[in-house]
Image (cartoon, rainbow, N blue to C red; front, side, top):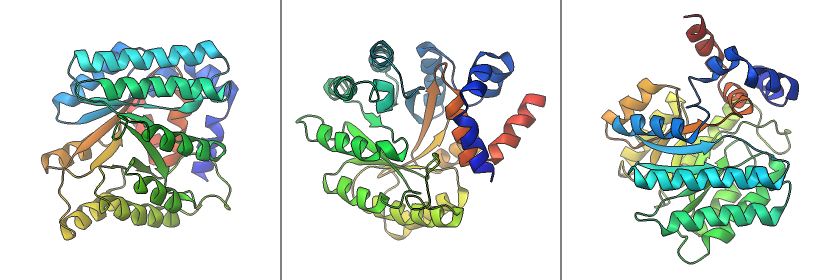
Length: 307
């Protein structure tokens, strides 16, 4: 019930307009979003790096409606990659194809994303671009593009995909990605999908996550396990120990501002941890989907606001 409620809120244009302009809305988001500018994200990245954690930076936004917005978004990512190199930060970037203009001009979106991957692959040391997954209407096009881009000479290991465990097709998608040794971020999923496409009950989503997680961990490819679920994290740790999988063979991933205690605990125990740091003015849909993934976050935010 709560999940559907927050997903519905994420799709409300009127609530989004009010929230993103209001001071209380900005305060509401500040725990989970680094700020609105590139410099805000870079400062947050440096702090997280100093604590021993790596970072993936995301310029928030999706479904842009014109060419200029798409080009501006890509330019911010070029700037981010330049600054990551200049400041020697331990960070890569994540992007959405609809933020590159996929709804406006498919070729434009692919060209902009291709340019960013080419830049990341040419850096010293090489960097990495994660192509985020969006709702089911975009799933196949996104995966097709990642496969295509990964086959370009020099790009291997510099571009990866996201797989959502609640999607019924995900096991097949994982098999195809692994056949080309493409790096995967595994998450549970945060879009509203029909039952014929996605598992609905949480136990079914969790069970599929664990099933896919074990496939990834044994693949010999470096993947990211994106979860705040302590039970699943324990299962991953136990599985790694049982199968003699080195602690540096994969990484856990968590969101900026969520379970910092658990993040630090994992790092202290020798596990790899990457923090997903979003920035930008279009934080409302992102935050609502995070609440949909884990409604307990709503109580957490409320407590901090009143405090």
